[in-house]
Every structure is written in C-alpha cells, then in structure tokens.
Image (cartoon, rainbow, N blue to C red; front, side, top):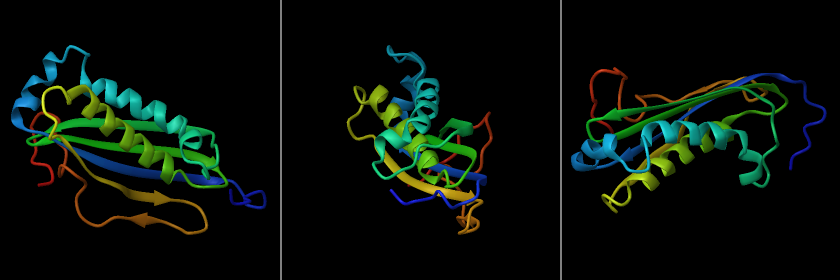
Length: 158
C-alpha cells in the first residue's frame, strides 16, 4: 500500500454507477422474485460492500466512511445503479463507490439469472470525485439510464 501517513485528512466524496441490462420479461418479473425484492437487496448489498472494500481490493486503505448511499432504479431496458460515498480521510473513496455499484449490479444479476442468462452488467464507472491532492473529477454526459424520474421507466444504455 502507498504510505499516506504524511497526508492531511480532508473531505472526500465519490460517485459511481453501473447498469444491468435485461429484457422486458425479466423486468416484469422483478416484483415476483422468490428471493425477495432484487432492487432493495441490491441496494443493501452495495452499502455493505462499500464498507468492506479494503478486504476485497488488496492495496486499498481501510477508511472510516461517513456516508454511503446506493440508489437502484428501473429503466426501460434494465436497472440503473448509482452510489455515493463520503469520508474525511487521507485518501479518496473512489474504490468504495465503484465497489458499491459493482456489487449492487452483481446482486441484481444473481437474483435474476434464473430468468435469463443473457443479463449484462454494463458501464461500471466513476462519475465524479472531489477532495484530495488530485482535485475534482466530473464525467461528461449522462449516467447510465439517463436522467432520473422515479415514476417513469427510462431507456438505459443500448
């Protein structure tokens, strides 16, 4: 691991996203999943995973996370996932945000794979980060799934 003992703790945030592409039959079957609500289970799995990032990524520092939010929403052609993680520490939380989005996507896949093996996890990516010596980063363009409106399904990535 990189030595970060000389660094000063600062406020750091990161947002990541992922998209789980699935057909309309699988989307329609989500409310009747015998394992439970895939969207809520995925949200909780993402939160839990962010807290264990240093155990999964060998060179990742363990961090005291002060905030984790994972949002999972239906789109016309799949499930869009976003995560946001924050801390005040000497290193950033990009990996925690990426792990949260990735594990949430893997959980959706796991809970729906019996219905269709062709489900795809797409576009796991860092959307933004702030704080630290390297400064801020903001990805251009819309996040997977497009803009959010909870009451309507949107078209996600092709």
